[in-house]
Image (tube, rainbow, N blue to C red; front, side):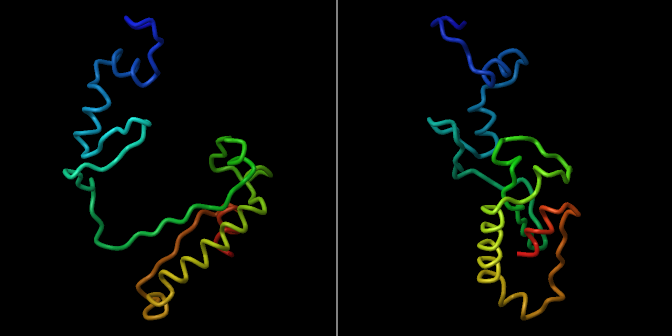
Length: 129
């Protein structure tokens, strides 16, 4: 317990025990600020840690039973890692939005695009949408 009789949170214990600087200072070094609710927001000093010479679009797979139950599914392809109906619907909506946002660029010059996906069934089902 701290001096006020309150049990400190894990992040607070972590930085106190390891001698790290307080989370607010660490966030500020990255150009970020911790909000009162525990979230992050960008400071005017924020600079991305890396820049790309090309575009990068990452699409998450649709929802699975493991996602619903907050289970780590790793690179498994078991029954709990297959898309549920809501996951298929989300993938279809995402595909529609992707075409709206990038369809014209894709049709203009497909050679400028490369698509990669994991070999897992859940990513195949998402990509097929």
